[in-house]
Length: 449
Image 1 (cartoon, rainbow, N blue to C red):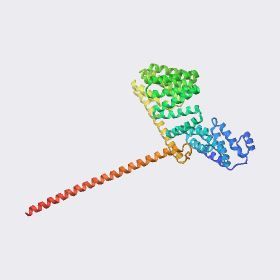
Image 2: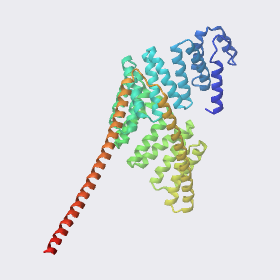
Image 3: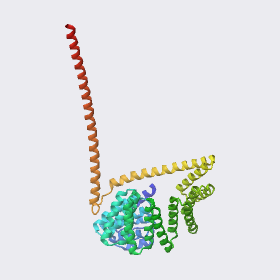
Image 4: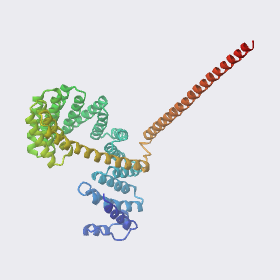
């Protein structure tokens, strides 16, 4: 959100911060007329309903109405509508890809929701907070919130929600490379989805389990799971998912070294992409096929597919895929002894790579700064999360104490060692001096004699 938008939003809140029975004009005659007939104590609920309706279509509108609803809820100490307004603000900022603000409002909403004690709403908010932490790459906190959400859903008997949370947890373990734990949670999710006869999620579970076998280089088992997923998606006539599956199967065959089979699956995906007109998947498939032709040493064909992929990627502004194609075209021209063309693509590749890296680095730096500020200012959850949060903090403090103690011990030990070395050297020096003095005395005695 720009500075001007922030200022206008702050001005808007200030203007309406002291309003109670006064008329409120939103530029909408229907809303204005209804609002003026509603008692002040019910205005928060009315405004929250408008905020809710605009969540997916107009997040800025949601933000505007939710802030005013929050003001009325605060005036009349309405915890329920306060929690709703804060929740809608969290969702709106999340939809605007502002994870930091979303987290802030979700945490505040959770604090109010805990007072209300509705377990379903508590679990819903904890899941949202877990997802935001996942997006912010704070996977330990994400896992903590997902596990607590899972416990509540189990008590409530919400099997569909349990299954989705199990997938969330499995995704974290997959990211960490803990494939046994990841598969364990994916298997639990699959069993629940089978029980619920959720065909789409059954197919998705087969796909996820297939990725685990692929990551552990158990390619035949990976193909078995991916083919199960493919058959389910085919029953559902889900072309987008079929494209994903066919590309994945093509990738597994490529890793197995079965290049002809790999190419055939990439081509199947390519044919479906033509129907759905998905430029992103289209560019990726062209690049995948180019890679297979490159490994087959059919460099002219490979070059043709890389160039086609590059063209589509530029149209769709796919910076990473553009960069990958530059690198691939450099490789092809280097192998086929076209040094001038190879150098041209290499320079483009390096320039774009540096540009992407610098943008990502600056975004990460800004995200880290904002994240630290939020962590410092946010209210920690006092119920349901308290024991685990305190436990984590204790571990962190213990680690700090241990590391500090270890450093102090090492420094002290070093000083002691240095002291003893110096002391030993002094003793040796004194001994040498004493020995010399004794020798001199003996010589003097001998001379006198």
